[in-house]
Image (tube, rainbow, N blue to C red; front, side, top):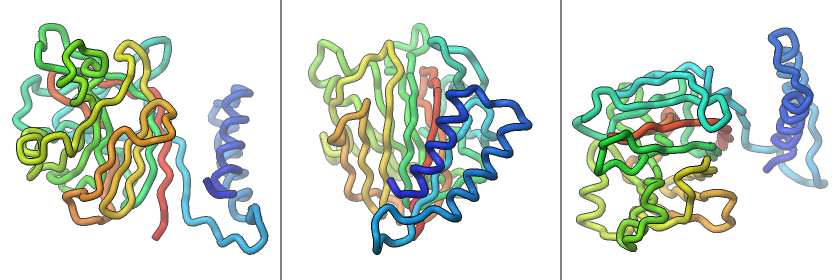
Length: 256
């Protein structure tokens, strides 16, 4: 994390801990953050200017562009959250996401707290929930990394091995990747389907790493992302037969 990112983060954390959330105070805090960033000094002599900018987003109020989903604000597990459900219930493909309006990036880090729950009577659902990225302007192409929470502690080891997943829409759905490259684009990771899950997704160039619940090592590494590296949208993703809850979201965009 850069010196600038630390200053911005400290200001926002202080604001939240003191309960300064009203509309009169938040603009002031944003202005202070901008001034602090502009005049921040490198932490060490000779350190270059930081090349990242950080955004803490209110996931419950951020404007969304939806594709095949419904998005609502709810209370879940004692917290305000954004709920995504697939509409219709049986989609024809994986293009079921809500892109964050006005946010694009090529290289970035996304930190999210989320939870996926299978819909009642959806026997093949696993609570599919994750992050879509490099979304095209027309919403027809994107990549995503997601988890299948109910697989993590299943009694079947094969199901456990399918807890995480990478896809690239439209050419590389999970079925094709699993058939042609068994085990390469999915993995096991331990998580509790009945609790919030922390997800940290690091994307740079043609590679992506997924970290789960503060783990120091990635649960999934993809070194050959299928789309040509380019700037695109970032969004919330949900799979069929599932309810996806998003509690918080932080994006750090890395400049070239």
